[in-house]
Amino acid sequence: MFALIFKRLALGLVTIWLVSALIFLGVEALPGDACTAVLERDAHGEALEKCREIMGLNAPALARYLSWAASAMQGDFGISANGQESISELVGYRVRNSFLLAAGPLSVGIPLSIFLGTVAGLRRDTWVDILFSTGAILAMTIPEFVAATILILVFAIWLGWVPAIVLTPADAQPLEFFPEFILAAVVLTMLMVAHIMRMVRSSVIDAMASDYVQMATLKGVPYWRIVFRHALPNALLPAINIIALTVAWLLGGVVVVEVVFNYPGLGRLLVDSISGRDLPVVQAITLIVAATYVAINLIADILSLALNPRLRSHHMRRG
Image (cartoon, rainbow, N blue to C red; front, top):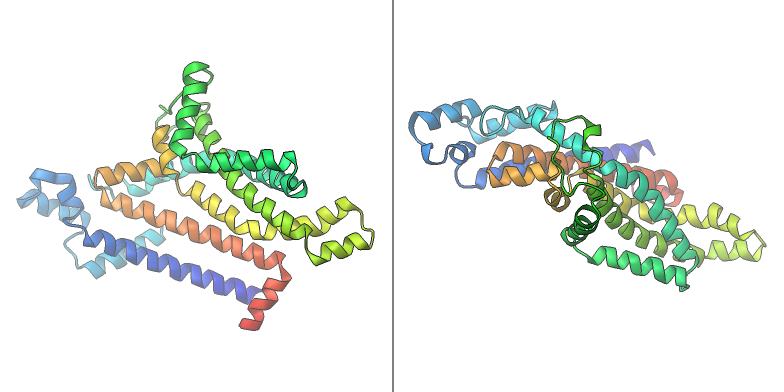
């Protein structure tokens, strides 16, 4: 078991290293650099040389990559293209805000989606299943910006219950974002519940039709014991990966939702940095998002191995 975890951890570290190299190469391939982007018409002569000296752009590409990667491993991403802000401090607030925005959907959405998916799977083809499944399909097919616009129109403009957008600055205390981020959290919860519920429903249907459940039924095991002791634990295993992807999607910054609601999270900062060609910030955010996806998927793999002895023995035989 520990050998498998070590292999997955090593693979995750290699993946992050490859992603960091691709990010750096991608930025290097762009025309110009951070200094030409920020100086624009003044990108010449002494001003350009001074900027490149401050940003460390005069060094060879390999040396700059090694220096950037080594600093990033310590949480230091350098300074922004304007040379006035620490990227670590700038990104730190946005990471915190994205975690804050994701906290509500994660704490409410995961239990709710598992409950709804289980009920729909156990009541397959009944009105309950049709109602839940139809609602999930609608939530999955409606684009994020459309759902956000509808919620703003109804609850912010018509009813006036909550603010339409977030006006609180990025470095404010977490409680200051309430209730401005409620509508954004509701949109994310709707999307999250829809995707996970569909997966849980399918897994529950497959588990209830399996041989071990049929055998337990023939032996006279009570129905709800079959559900909670046999069907549900096995049904949740396939859902772990999609839950992990959803969690990574939330923590990595939800670009569309954050832009619509003007929420100062990681996704909004990425859009602003791309628009302003602040390449050092883009590099930092992209690496953070990639590391988040790798870490969450690593945790999901470890959970799957820990909860599924058959999967663990299969990997051991292959090893």
